[in-house]
View 1 (cartoon, rainbow over the protein chains, first blue to last red):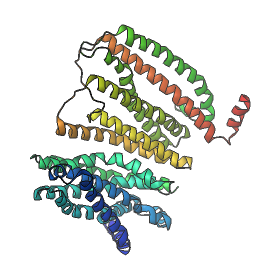
View 2 (view 1 turned 180 degrees about the vertical axis):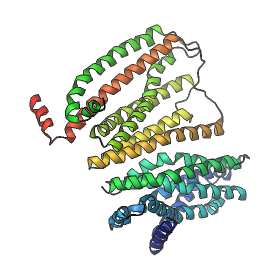
View 3 (view 1 turned 90 degrees about the vertical axis):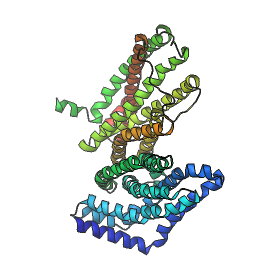
View 4 (view 1 turned 60 degrees about the vertical axis):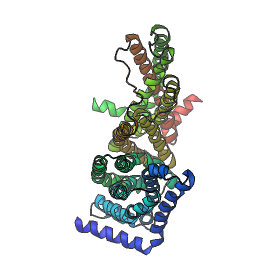
Length: 222
Length: 246
């Protein structure tokens, strides 16, 4: 089981490494969206500090959503996915491996980049740390929940826009607790409660979504 | 009994049964609406604090109840279709979605009017309002997904998974919004009224809710009948039905 998981992760990471441009596009999308807000809102640091957590989180939501289609699309097109469904190994584990790999190339870079973007919004250093921790806990939730949407819209007409319609409402709890953690810290309250809830979301979605995604994939490939 | 129930899960058997049931439910809905509106406008007393404005509650609350209830029923039918592979269950789920979305929309609009008159604001990021808005998004997502997939069986099953995931998510979303809201601004407006609600008010509301319920059943059955005809257009029983009509 563990070996299967590692094999799938290694394979997907290798594939992603061979197509580095794709990974960087998502990251730069995130950077550009976050950088646009001060231009739209105005350079007043007091306002910026206030909206920073929400802006970074919404941008992370959009960026992770954009990269979701890549999760199964390539394997679907070249027939690999069909082989995965036929394989004797449990599909949910393969799916989990793919999700973890997807997070490592799409979610993790966002979390690593976020503190730098937080500086643009004049967040204090400790708040940057909280932002980083919240994104570290929250972005895997986005990948996990998003995987269901990606599997449901596989090969469907207008899949990209449809995917966002399905997945964004389900992202709301992660957004609330993720941005809430940083806001709580800035307001002088301990962010621990928010981070715990994010961790709870992560555990729950980590347990449930691989199975649901596997089911959705079987339906898509029928 | 079990055999009996499965007999009606065949569209060919259910089509004429639904056809007979629809007028009954429409009739019940009409009668209950008349009684409910009479109770709400002539019997129920004027509210001490809000005046006549509060009477929007007789539309607003039943619509809000139905919006949530229909989502659960829809997810239930969709799940049943997924597990038992019964065609009719999935058709019922699809037939319910537009009605549920309509009630969600009505609840939001009437709520906005009521809010404007009672609190002086069209919209407040209160937990209930926000969840209702997100419920509308979930309905829209379900309808868009099932509409986008051409293969009917796949559309049913994909829609079922989405509806079930949504049903699991609704309470999570509700509580996250609730905590988020209390953190932000505290309870600026409370929807909880004084417990001493006049009995006639409550009665009017319940009768209106029943009317909305009957209407939902009637309209969902009519829509399900159309879906049956469309999906099974190549089968013998549909040809029979159409021949009888023409």
